[in-house]
Image 1 (cartoon, rainbow over the protein chains, first blue to last red):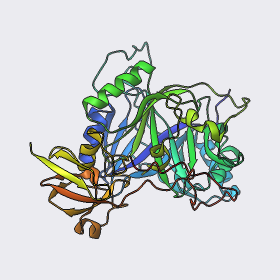
Image 2 (cartoon, chains in turn cyan, yellow):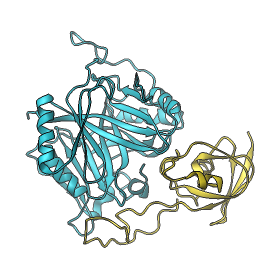
Image 3 (cartoon, one colour):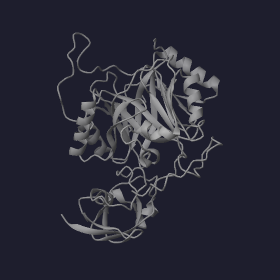
Length: 308
Length: 123
């Protein structure tokens, strides 16, 4: 499969209620690498393994939630092409100048039908993962914190998820990987989409309120490392929502937990590869409990109701 | 470390909570019920209570759910208050209606008619 359009999730800007407390938590408990602050006071992080300058940006605010979620595209020509296609589709776009986010090029920002701000960009400074590009070592030395591999995907809640699917598949080149049907057998309760060969790069759940964050997810190298993350969470009295457990949907192993402002995060491992020729998987209303939490096999009210 | 008694007016439930634990954490840690449990970090708003009587120390909570007026009137998120005396609280938060429950006012689907799953919002 050739990946030439939207490559992968690039950054998420998350609102936090107490910046200093959150910076310490994302550094010490999540094990992310602090990458500096900008003139607005926003704090930047990346995982140890990520090569681009930042993937998580924290902004002090009086409400929790997500400001925007961004995808990296192949190059500047691709960015301009998507901007044109979005406008032709009837989506209003805004250009955010290079440098507005640290070490990040020009961004194309637009609102999707569920009210979330999504961004595309082509450039972010390659600062490397500290191992170099010639004869690198493997990152096997254990260190403090959960230390995920990468910021991997997000699940967002809002009303018109059908409009989101249409926009992401028809304009941005995503493919539908899995979906959950409501009782009528027709309406989607939830959808999982990918722009790559991952089981998901973004997902949406139908919800009464627009613009809500369900979780930002971080990839772990193994099920064992997910269990290690659970131990780290308990040592640090982190608020765990559910897990360690497994999803039927995507088949990944998982823990849902909350940052110090109540934003849900996930550490997950596994899942399967998806290619655009593969038939999407559908979960029926009757089996949705098993789809979402494979071991509990029941719907969890917090999963469907607790968002920021 | 001091211990205080938290009484939930709606259910008559009461439990002991130290001043090192939030009112919500104290409830959850003892396996008690009555206040809906969400993020436990001041962000999601489901554990909202009205403090009817007593003193407490509070931490920052999301303005999406607690206005300055709310705060003045003792309307707070129970995950963000720590008892400084015995407390009497009344639950006013709830799990938000989600699309799997009836009467959710939703934009598109015209065919929504979901069975009630039982009121599971009371943890």
